[in-house]
Image (cartoon, rainbow, N blue to C red; front, top):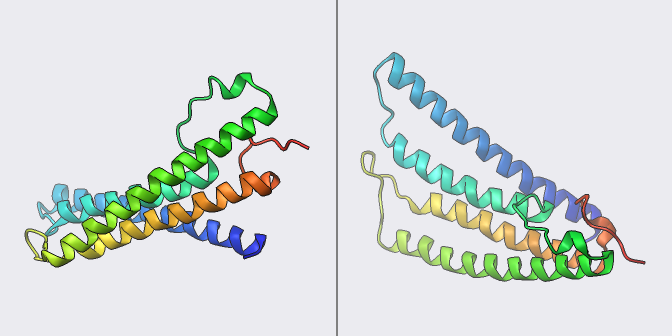
Length: 169
């Protein structure tokens, strides 16, 4: 996969995450408006909203993991030279890759469990496993993006979009 394809894939993941932000916002907005103006509650709006927030979180992990937009503690990193900063970045990204890979594996068990147990929403009796599957897909996308980030940190640090990453040549 060349650089342009990877960048397109990364941008697509980020757009999907952004779309889920919009979907969650619209769901909340409509639920509040209907409840406050017409005294009407959308059936299963709480369950759907809760599951959409879960989806948003996992796709958000995918979007922030590649760009390095998550919370970091740079006490040591800020006080060492570029060579060691890069080593710290690679190590931290490898740890993140391991953690998110394990998380993705365990989340797949949750998807399978909700499917096998036929877990349904309370009011409309909708199956919940598709929501869990979409969240799992976001987590799987995070694994792919973190792997791409790791590859780029090691072999092509100039391709990383962080402003903190410095090349050491």
